[in-house]
Length: 361
Image 1 (cartoon, one colour):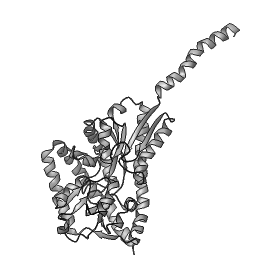
Image 2 (cartoon, rainbow, N blue to C red):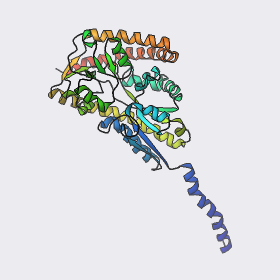
Image 3 (cartoon, rainbow, N blue to C red):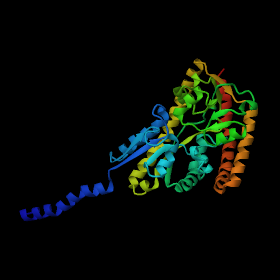
Image 4 (cartoon, rainbow, N blue to C red):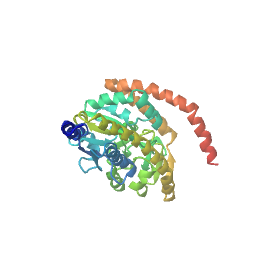
Protein backbone atom coordinates (compact mmCIF):
# COMPACT_ATOMS: atom_id res chain seq x y z
CA UNK A 1 0.00 0.00 0.00
CA UNK A 2 1.45 3.40 -1.00
CA UNK A 3 1.60 6.46 1.23
CA UNK A 4 -1.57 7.98 -0.29
CA UNK A 5 -3.56 4.79 0.36
CA UNK A 6 -2.26 4.59 3.93
CA UNK A 7 -3.31 8.18 4.64
CA UNK A 8 -6.68 7.57 3.00
CA UNK A 9 -7.30 4.48 5.14
CA UNK A 10 -6.29 6.32 8.29
CA UNK A 11 -8.60 9.22 7.45
CA UNK A 12 -11.51 6.82 6.83
CA UNK A 13 -10.85 5.03 10.10
CA UNK A 14 -10.62 8.23 12.15
CA UNK A 15 -14.37 9.04 12.26
CA UNK A 16 -15.17 5.49 13.38
CA UNK A 17 -12.51 5.64 16.10
CA UNK A 18 -13.73 9.00 17.30
CA UNK A 19 -17.35 7.84 17.26
CA UNK A 20 -16.73 4.73 19.37
CA UNK A 21 -16.42 6.49 22.77
CA UNK A 22 -19.51 8.58 22.02
CA UNK A 23 -21.45 5.45 21.12
CA UNK A 24 -20.29 3.72 24.32
CA UNK A 25 -21.42 6.72 26.35
CA UNK A 26 -24.81 6.64 24.65
CA UNK A 27 -25.22 2.96 25.50
CA UNK A 28 -23.89 3.29 29.05
CA UNK A 29 -24.76 6.70 30.48
CA UNK A 30 -23.57 7.85 33.88
CA UNK A 31 -26.53 7.82 36.28
CA UNK A 32 -26.72 8.81 39.93
CA UNK A 33 -29.65 7.78 42.15
CA UNK A 34 -30.52 8.23 45.80
CA UNK A 35 -31.92 5.33 47.80
CA UNK A 36 -33.86 5.94 51.02
CA UNK A 37 -34.02 2.97 53.41
CA UNK A 38 -36.72 2.52 56.04
CA UNK A 39 -34.07 1.17 58.42
CA UNK A 40 -31.33 2.81 60.50
CA UNK A 41 -27.69 2.07 59.83
CA UNK A 42 -27.18 0.25 63.15
CA UNK A 43 -29.59 -2.49 62.03
CA UNK A 44 -26.81 -3.72 59.84
CA UNK A 45 -28.47 -6.80 58.32
CA UNK A 46 -31.50 -4.83 57.15
CA UNK A 47 -29.46 -1.82 56.02
CA UNK A 48 -27.02 -4.24 54.37
CA UNK A 49 -29.59 -4.54 51.60
CA UNK A 50 -29.35 -0.84 50.77
CA UNK A 51 -25.56 -0.86 50.95
CA UNK A 52 -25.24 -4.05 48.92
CA UNK A 53 -27.39 -2.92 46.03
CA UNK A 54 -25.33 0.27 45.85
CA UNK A 55 -22.12 -1.74 45.76
CA UNK A 56 -23.23 -4.43 43.31
CA UNK A 57 -24.94 -2.13 40.81
CA UNK A 58 -21.77 -0.03 40.63
CA UNK A 59 -19.64 -3.15 40.12
CA UNK A 60 -21.95 -4.57 37.45
CA UNK A 61 -22.06 -1.31 35.46
CA UNK A 62 -18.41 -0.29 35.57
CA UNK A 63 -19.26 2.41 38.13
CA UNK A 64 -21.41 4.23 35.60
CA UNK A 65 -24.62 3.64 37.55
CA UNK A 66 -24.24 4.63 41.19
CA UNK A 67 -26.88 4.47 43.90
CA UNK A 68 -26.20 6.26 47.19
CA UNK A 69 -27.97 4.69 50.18
CA UNK A 70 -29.34 6.80 53.04
CA UNK A 71 -30.52 5.38 56.39
CA UNK A 72 -34.03 6.00 57.73
CA UNK A 73 -35.04 9.61 58.11
CA UNK A 74 -32.21 11.30 56.23
CA UNK A 75 -34.41 12.25 53.26
CA UNK A 76 -37.85 10.87 54.07
CA UNK A 77 -39.30 9.41 57.29
CA UNK A 78 -39.00 5.65 57.68
CA UNK A 79 -42.74 5.07 57.25
CA UNK A 80 -43.01 7.28 54.15
CA UNK A 81 -40.45 5.74 51.81
CA UNK A 82 -43.09 4.42 49.42
CA UNK A 83 -44.61 7.90 49.16
CA UNK A 84 -41.23 9.54 48.58
CA UNK A 85 -40.40 7.15 45.73
CA UNK A 86 -43.91 7.28 44.27
CA UNK A 87 -43.85 11.08 44.21
CA UNK A 88 -40.37 11.29 42.68
CA UNK A 89 -38.65 12.89 45.68
CA UNK A 90 -36.12 10.07 45.38
CA UNK A 91 -35.53 7.52 42.67
CA UNK A 92 -35.65 4.37 44.80
CA UNK A 93 -36.18 3.02 48.30
CA UNK A 94 -36.02 -0.01 50.59
CA UNK A 95 -39.15 -0.73 52.64
CA UNK A 96 -41.67 -3.47 53.55
CA UNK A 97 -44.93 -3.06 51.67
CA UNK A 98 -47.18 -4.09 54.56
CA UNK A 99 -46.41 -0.78 56.26
CA UNK A 100 -48.70 0.81 53.67
CA UNK A 101 -51.85 -1.30 53.96
CA UNK A 102 -53.75 1.90 54.74
CA UNK A 103 -53.41 2.65 51.03
CA UNK A 104 -54.38 -0.84 49.88
CA UNK A 105 -54.68 -3.91 52.15
CA UNK A 106 -53.53 -6.06 49.22
CA UNK A 107 -49.97 -4.84 49.81
CA UNK A 108 -49.70 -7.13 52.85
CA UNK A 109 -49.51 -10.24 50.65
CA UNK A 110 -46.13 -9.19 49.27
CA UNK A 111 -44.45 -8.88 52.67
CA UNK A 112 -46.23 -11.46 54.83
CA UNK A 113 -49.64 -12.31 56.22
CA UNK A 114 -50.66 -13.82 59.57
CA UNK A 115 -50.41 -17.61 59.34
CA UNK A 116 -49.09 -17.32 55.80
CA UNK A 117 -46.14 -18.97 54.11
CA UNK A 118 -42.62 -18.96 55.50
CA UNK A 119 -39.58 -17.63 53.66
CA UNK A 120 -39.40 -20.50 51.19
CA UNK A 121 -43.15 -20.79 50.70
CA UNK A 122 -43.55 -17.06 50.19
CA UNK A 123 -40.69 -17.09 47.71
CA UNK A 124 -42.31 -19.94 45.80
CA UNK A 125 -45.60 -18.04 45.63
CA UNK A 126 -43.93 -14.83 44.48
CA UNK A 127 -41.86 -16.55 41.80
CA UNK A 128 -44.09 -19.45 40.72
CA UNK A 129 -47.56 -18.67 42.03
CA UNK A 130 -48.15 -15.31 40.38
CA UNK A 131 -47.23 -13.15 43.39
CA UNK A 132 -44.70 -10.98 41.55
CA UNK A 133 -47.17 -10.26 38.76
CA UNK A 134 -49.93 -9.34 41.23
CA UNK A 135 -47.51 -7.11 43.13
CA UNK A 136 -46.51 -5.32 39.92
CA UNK A 137 -50.20 -4.68 39.21
CA UNK A 138 -50.71 -2.98 42.58
CA UNK A 139 -47.46 -0.99 42.50
CA UNK A 140 -48.16 0.35 39.02
CA UNK A 141 -51.01 2.41 40.46
CA UNK A 142 -48.47 4.20 42.65
CA UNK A 143 -46.04 4.90 39.81
CA UNK A 144 -43.70 2.19 41.14
CA UNK A 145 -41.70 -0.82 40.01
CA UNK A 146 -40.69 -3.24 42.77
CA UNK A 147 -38.54 -6.28 43.43
CA UNK A 148 -38.35 -8.55 46.52
CA UNK A 149 -35.41 -7.36 48.56
CA UNK A 150 -34.35 -9.54 51.47
CA UNK A 151 -36.26 -11.40 54.16
CA UNK A 152 -36.01 -11.94 57.91
CA UNK A 153 -37.54 -15.41 58.10
CA UNK A 154 -40.05 -16.23 60.86
CA UNK A 155 -40.03 -13.38 63.35
CA UNK A 156 -40.37 -13.42 67.11
CA UNK A 157 -43.59 -12.43 68.83
CA UNK A 158 -42.17 -9.42 70.63
CA UNK A 159 -41.22 -8.02 74.04
CA UNK A 160 -43.79 -7.55 76.80
CA UNK A 161 -43.55 -5.69 80.07
CA UNK A 162 -45.99 -8.18 81.61
CA UNK A 163 -46.57 -11.86 80.99
CA UNK A 164 -49.42 -12.95 78.71
CA UNK A 165 -51.12 -15.84 80.47
CA UNK A 166 -54.48 -15.77 78.74
CA UNK A 167 -56.47 -14.02 76.04
CA UNK A 168 -57.72 -11.61 78.70
CA UNK A 169 -54.19 -10.21 79.05
CA UNK A 170 -54.33 -9.08 75.41
CA UNK A 171 -57.36 -6.88 76.06
CA UNK A 172 -56.33 -3.22 76.13
CA UNK A 173 -52.66 -4.05 75.42
CA UNK A 174 -50.85 -1.15 73.71
CA UNK A 175 -48.78 -3.12 71.22
CA UNK A 176 -46.34 -1.83 68.60
CA UNK A 177 -47.04 -4.17 65.69
CA UNK A 178 -46.97 -3.82 61.90
CA UNK A 179 -49.18 -4.89 59.04
CA UNK A 180 -52.24 -7.13 59.23
CA UNK A 181 -50.94 -8.51 62.53
CA UNK A 182 -51.99 -5.24 64.13
CA UNK A 183 -55.54 -5.63 62.83
CA UNK A 184 -55.69 -9.21 64.13
CA UNK A 185 -54.62 -8.09 67.60
CA UNK A 186 -57.10 -5.24 67.44
CA UNK A 187 -59.87 -7.77 66.90
CA UNK A 188 -58.60 -9.58 70.00
CA UNK A 189 -58.88 -6.39 72.05
CA UNK A 190 -55.38 -4.92 71.80
CA UNK A 191 -54.52 -1.36 70.77
CA UNK A 192 -52.02 -1.69 67.88
CA UNK A 193 -49.58 1.09 67.04
CA UNK A 194 -47.13 1.36 64.13
CA UNK A 195 -43.91 3.03 65.27
CA UNK A 196 -40.63 3.27 63.34
CA UNK A 197 -37.75 1.16 64.65
CA UNK A 198 -35.76 4.03 66.14
CA UNK A 199 -38.75 5.21 68.21
CA UNK A 200 -39.76 1.89 69.74
CA UNK A 201 -37.33 1.79 72.69
CA UNK A 202 -38.22 5.18 74.17
CA UNK A 203 -41.93 4.44 73.72
CA UNK A 204 -41.53 1.14 75.55
CA UNK A 205 -39.32 2.64 78.24
CA UNK A 206 -41.76 5.47 79.00
CA UNK A 207 -44.77 3.16 79.05
CA UNK A 208 -46.36 4.76 75.99
CA UNK A 209 -46.71 1.16 74.78
CA UNK A 210 -46.88 -2.08 76.77
CA UNK A 211 -45.20 -4.32 74.23
CA UNK A 212 -43.36 -4.21 70.92
CA UNK A 213 -42.41 -6.57 68.16
CA UNK A 214 -39.65 -5.87 65.68
CA UNK A 215 -37.79 -8.72 63.98
CA UNK A 216 -35.86 -11.25 66.01
CA UNK A 217 -33.01 -11.74 68.48
CA UNK A 218 -30.19 -10.12 66.49
CA UNK A 219 -32.00 -6.86 65.73
CA UNK A 220 -33.93 -6.82 69.01
CA UNK A 221 -30.69 -7.07 70.99
CA UNK A 222 -29.27 -4.09 69.11
CA UNK A 223 -32.36 -2.03 69.92
CA UNK A 224 -32.12 -3.01 73.60
CA UNK A 225 -35.72 -4.08 74.17
CA UNK A 226 -34.67 -6.66 76.78
CA UNK A 227 -33.66 -3.82 79.09
CA UNK A 228 -37.22 -2.48 79.40
CA UNK A 229 -39.42 -5.54 78.74
CA UNK A 230 -38.22 -8.98 79.79
CA UNK A 231 -40.88 -11.38 78.44
CA UNK A 232 -39.97 -12.51 74.93
CA UNK A 233 -42.70 -14.34 73.02
CA UNK A 234 -42.64 -16.74 70.08
CA UNK A 235 -43.59 -17.20 67.37
CA UNK A 236 -44.50 -14.07 65.45
CA UNK A 237 -47.37 -15.92 63.78
CA UNK A 238 -48.34 -12.75 61.89
CA UNK A 239 -44.88 -12.67 60.27
CA UNK A 240 -43.89 -16.20 59.20
CA UNK A 241 -41.57 -14.30 56.88
CA UNK A 242 -41.11 -10.60 56.20
CA UNK A 243 -40.03 -9.76 52.69
CA UNK A 244 -38.74 -6.29 51.96
CA UNK A 245 -39.07 -4.55 48.62
CA UNK A 246 -36.78 -2.40 46.50
CA UNK A 247 -39.01 0.25 44.98
CA UNK A 248 -38.20 2.38 41.95
CA UNK A 249 -40.07 5.36 40.59
CA UNK A 250 -41.59 4.32 37.26
CA UNK A 251 -40.36 7.44 35.44
CA UNK A 252 -36.83 6.78 36.69
CA UNK A 253 -37.02 3.08 35.74
CA UNK A 254 -38.37 3.30 32.20
CA UNK A 255 -35.40 5.06 30.52
CA UNK A 256 -32.75 2.89 32.19
CA UNK A 257 -30.65 0.81 29.80
CA UNK A 258 -31.54 -2.89 29.90
CA UNK A 259 -28.11 -3.70 31.35
CA UNK A 260 -28.77 -1.38 34.29
CA UNK A 261 -32.20 -2.88 34.89
CA UNK A 262 -30.61 -6.32 34.89
CA UNK A 263 -27.96 -5.16 37.37
CA UNK A 264 -30.67 -4.04 39.81
CA UNK A 265 -32.53 -7.34 39.52
CA UNK A 266 -29.35 -9.37 40.01
CA UNK A 267 -28.41 -7.34 43.08
CA UNK A 268 -31.91 -7.76 44.57
CA UNK A 269 -31.75 -11.54 44.13
CA UNK A 270 -28.35 -11.64 45.82
CA UNK A 271 -29.63 -9.57 48.76
CA UNK A 272 -32.58 -11.92 49.25
CA UNK A 273 -30.29 -14.93 49.69
CA UNK A 274 -27.59 -13.23 51.73
CA UNK A 275 -29.89 -11.43 54.16
CA UNK A 276 -31.63 -14.66 55.15
CA UNK A 277 -28.28 -16.42 55.62
CA UNK A 278 -27.07 -13.62 57.88
CA UNK A 279 -30.15 -13.78 60.08
CA UNK A 280 -29.98 -17.57 60.32
CA UNK A 281 -26.37 -17.32 61.46
CA UNK A 282 -26.82 -14.40 63.87
CA UNK A 283 -30.17 -15.06 65.55
CA UNK A 284 -29.32 -18.17 67.61
CA UNK A 285 -26.18 -16.54 68.98
CA UNK A 286 -28.07 -13.37 69.89
CA UNK A 287 -30.87 -15.34 71.53
CA UNK A 288 -28.34 -17.09 73.76
CA UNK A 289 -26.95 -13.73 74.83
CA UNK A 290 -30.41 -12.31 75.51
CA UNK A 291 -31.38 -15.22 77.73
CA UNK A 292 -28.10 -14.86 79.62
CA UNK A 293 -29.03 -11.21 80.24
CA UNK A 294 -32.39 -12.12 81.75
CA UNK A 295 -34.82 -12.38 78.85
CA UNK A 296 -37.69 -14.75 79.69
CA UNK A 297 -38.69 -16.86 76.69
CA UNK A 298 -42.40 -17.61 76.46
CA UNK A 299 -44.70 -19.39 74.02
CA UNK A 300 -48.11 -17.90 73.29
CA UNK A 301 -50.92 -19.51 75.29
CA UNK A 302 -52.89 -21.88 73.08
CA UNK A 303 -56.09 -19.87 73.45
CA UNK A 304 -54.30 -16.80 72.10
CA UNK A 305 -53.10 -18.73 69.06
CA UNK A 306 -56.55 -20.21 68.45
CA UNK A 307 -58.19 -16.80 68.76
CA UNK A 308 -55.62 -15.31 66.39
CA UNK A 309 -56.31 -18.02 63.81
CA UNK A 310 -60.06 -17.37 63.99
CA UNK A 311 -59.66 -13.60 63.84
CA UNK A 312 -57.21 -13.80 60.94
CA UNK A 313 -59.63 -15.77 58.82
CA UNK A 314 -62.50 -13.52 59.83
CA UNK A 315 -60.49 -10.40 59.00
CA UNK A 316 -59.48 -11.73 55.60
CA UNK A 317 -63.01 -12.73 54.67
CA UNK A 318 -64.36 -9.33 55.70
CA UNK A 319 -61.59 -7.48 53.86
CA UNK A 320 -62.18 -9.59 50.75
CA UNK A 321 -65.89 -8.71 50.84
CA UNK A 322 -64.98 -5.00 50.77
CA UNK A 323 -62.01 -5.02 48.39
CA UNK A 324 -62.21 -6.86 45.06
CA UNK A 325 -58.46 -6.94 44.52
CA UNK A 326 -57.77 -8.27 48.00
CA UNK A 327 -60.39 -10.98 47.35
CA UNK A 328 -58.77 -11.96 44.06
CA UNK A 329 -55.29 -12.19 45.62
CA UNK A 330 -56.51 -14.02 48.75
CA UNK A 331 -58.34 -16.59 46.62
CA UNK A 332 -55.13 -17.17 44.64
CA UNK A 333 -52.84 -17.16 47.69
CA UNK A 334 -54.81 -19.41 50.06
CA UNK A 335 -54.82 -22.65 47.98
CA UNK A 336 -51.13 -22.19 47.18
CA UNK A 337 -50.37 -21.76 50.89
CA UNK A 338 -52.49 -24.76 51.86
CA UNK A 339 -50.66 -26.98 49.35
CA UNK A 340 -47.35 -25.78 50.77
CA UNK A 341 -48.51 -26.53 54.32
CA UNK A 342 -49.47 -30.08 53.35
CA UNK A 343 -46.16 -30.74 51.63
CA UNK A 344 -44.03 -29.28 54.43
CA UNK A 345 -46.04 -31.25 57.00
CA UNK A 346 -45.18 -34.52 55.24
CA UNK A 347 -41.47 -33.93 54.64
CA UNK A 348 -40.01 -30.84 56.29
CA UNK A 349 -41.95 -30.87 59.57
CA UNK A 350 -41.65 -34.61 60.06
CA UNK A 351 -37.89 -34.24 59.83
CA UNK A 352 -37.77 -31.10 61.99
CA UNK A 353 -39.89 -32.54 64.77
CA UNK A 354 -37.61 -35.55 65.17
CA UNK A 355 -34.20 -34.04 64.48
CA UNK A 356 -34.66 -30.89 66.56
CA UNK A 357 -35.89 -32.89 69.54
CA UNK A 358 -33.16 -35.51 69.21
CA UNK A 359 -30.43 -32.86 69.04
CA UNK A 360 -31.70 -31.29 72.26
CA UNK A 361 -31.24 -34.48 74.31
